[in-house]
Length: 157
Ligand SMILES: CC(C)(COP(=O)(O)OP(=O)(O)OC[C@H]1O[C@@H](n2cnc3c(N)ncnc32)[C@H](O)[C@@H]1OP(=O)(O)O)[C@@H](O)C(=O)NCCC(=O)NCCS
Image (cartoon, rainbow, N blue to C red):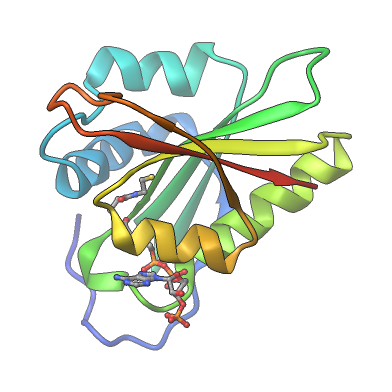
């Protein structure tokens, strides 16, 4: 990713991911997660094969954040599967913007509920989801490969 001046006040452009974004999305995933990160094959599946909504936030044509939402036909329940913001661009509301945009699109398509899993130690993401109105549904013991528990969160749309 080309370096953009930190503190740049430029507003991100939120748009659906395109095929040519693949490498940037994979880079972002590897920057944001050292464990449990999606590998190339999984990312290919999520982007090109799965029924999903994939949005990116770009600043000066560089992708700085992404969200992947899994959807299924005939099920009014969507699942946020991935949400990444490059470390240099956090705490500027970009994740919130991606979630709001995804949520708007889900509502327009008739979805009634969003769910997601978040690590019990991931306080940043928990803060974000709480601020967006998600509540804890249940704890999923040893959900991650490293043995950490996850919280299953839900929000009615
Ligand atoms: C979690 C993550 C997506 C948040 O992205 P972000 O763009 O910084 O989030 P936003 O700026 O939209 O934050 C919105 C609100 O979320 C909460 N929040 C975000 N980061 C937080 C932190 N580090 N600590 C506490 N609360 C936090 C705050 O309430 C914040 O509002 P505020 O800045 O007005 O206080 C980002 O830290 C990230 O990519 N982390 C690594 C990947 C990850 O954990 N993804 C989620 C997997 S479930």
